[in-house]
Length: 229
Image 1: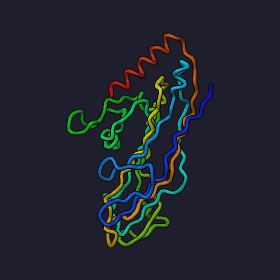
Image 2: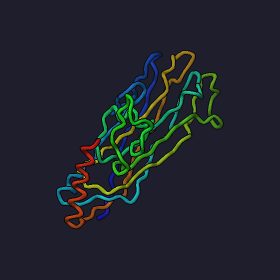
Image 3: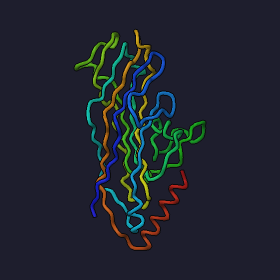
Image 4: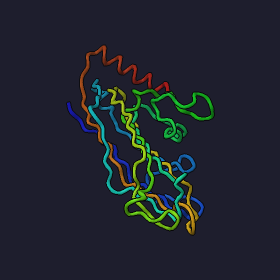
């Protein structure tokens, strides 16, 4: 049976007070310096109780407005913004989410050892994944980077890495991680505001009743994967 699963994230906004970023909205929290998180869950327990597998044909995103940045001065070498959107069949810790933009989950991490907790994720965990990197549009509708101005943000990187793997998990974990530059001084230098619109992730899904043995193996694997991370 066809299903449409939807994950909704609110708008994101930060403004500098001269020293620190101040959040301008709700349902967002800071998980590390200059790294912010929005999260929600999609409940699939009803399908699991009915012994149904949830599969996915495709996933896509919608945004409800403009990506914008405002500055007193802008440093092209370090003032980019990164946005990572994940829908996973297993949960992440804040520490894992805070480094996920540097080495996207489901891939071999840059370094197996070291101080970072990359987690033990593989491709099948990540139902939907998208990494976006933004810089200001310096050609159309932008002020000079050496004086106060603002601009729409343009993609420099736009990578999808969705597995669309069928799952018997009872929940999908939805995350939107946003990294921003250092806050400006609000007087003469640095970024003063960052505004990203609300985002919606739509999963074109279906439920199917698999043969008992196949379903039990998938259910077993869902619990195994959840316990490996």
